[in-house]
Amino acid sequence: MLFVTHLVVAWLLARLRGLPVAAAVAGAALPDLVDKPLASVGIVELYHTVGHTALLAPLAAVAAVRGGRALAVTVGWASHLATDALHVVVNGRPTDALFLAWPLVEPPTPLALPPGAFVWHYLWSRSFFVEIGIWLFALWVLVRARRTRGTGSDTPHR
Image 1 (cartoon, rainbow, N blue to C red):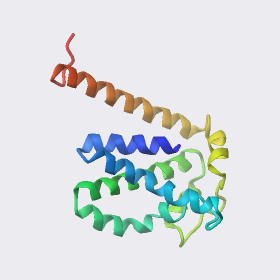
Image 2 (cartoon, one colour):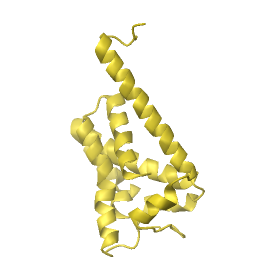
Image 3 (cartoon, rainbow, N blue to C red):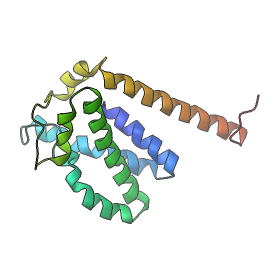
């Protein structure tokens, strides 16, 4: 998924679950804010490593128990991992989802494209169309929220 879509998914989840939106969006940004710079300077070989490993789930669960912002950050982070895994599976590369078990397991044939080249590769892929669906759903939620705010109810006036 493209970076901004991770933020949109976190925004959607936070709105739908009544969580602090800014914290969820920050959590969704974390994996790429950690991993992209590490790979860009050569500290790690792949763009899905430290910030993308599901092995951090126990730590995230402990943070989530606190509720509030910690839960929202955890939800954002988990949604990022889930959408990245969905992306590679939908695009026919299910073994690439092994990034979730990094450093215990590495994907056998990761795409390993830098972020800019990835965007061009990604356009018109199968998950690109899933992403369009996510954006359309987000737009629907936003329009519905504005209508509800404008009328004071969940039922739009005719």
